[in-house]
Image (cartoon, rainbow, N blue to C red; front, side, top):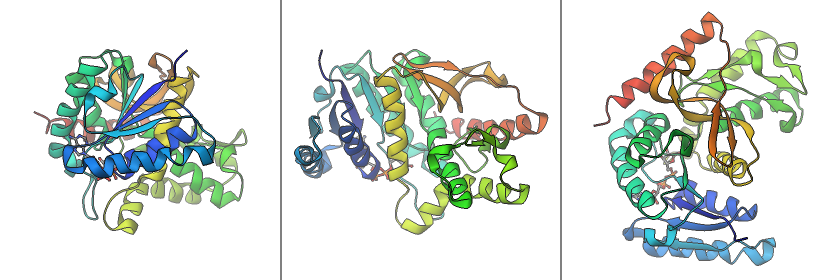
Length: 310
Ligand code: APR
């Protein structure tokens, strides 16, 4: 048996936090990759993290590099490279810069790890995952994006706070693109196995849904010069764990759709099964007319952004 190898591309706020969380969970050895202009800081961050492992009691090697040869044979690659949004920007404003970065990063990743599984975080994530998918030539089970774990984490946080109960006992359910028109499905949200609608009146739930939709923007406005990274990193690590340990967890992910929910040749956030083969299945649910309309609107926004890809 050998340790699993996980490469994290982009050693900025999210990438570095993800690397540390992966190591803390002892999910494997971590290779943190960034561009030559920041070679020193990338190596420095990785070494600093490595030096935390004796204290944490974990055996995970962490290296920082600008050379993709060091990523060779990765079991999993997580892409966080790219620019983050600033106050006043939407995720979609990042599309042209980040699409170029996705192309070059993907080519280098695939050259050295042709059998890996890729999770994309870079925004706008639905379109960026599509870019990585078509550049990689990988089958659809080996390319996915992160959005729903984070969106439901925000929803679960707000519900748990409101009810003063454990976050662990709150489950949430979000469909659609990772934008302000994402579709939180209240009727599939539970607290301790009891439907959310039995716990809170509609106006309170509506307010929490609205805060969840704008959750990314709330953080962007507070930080002033970047976007969220702790909860995004934790979300990536949950997906990574499901795959690396072949847990077959039911988690929302940005998945390639071929007819599911009535959409074709695009990536969108849907419930999935994540296991050793990556995104093993898209789970299809029946939606009410109202939910389907909301999802159509979200899918339409994703399509608009996809048109900006060349
Ligand atoms: N290859 C590798 N790394 C790159 C490349 C590239 N071609 N281009 C940029 N990077 C690196 C930057 O040098 C930087 O270190 O990506 C890193 C991005 O880090 P931050 O600027 O700290 O951004 P972060 O907050 O981590 O967000 C990254 O995740 O949530 C999304 O919207 C967010 O798209 C953004 C991404």
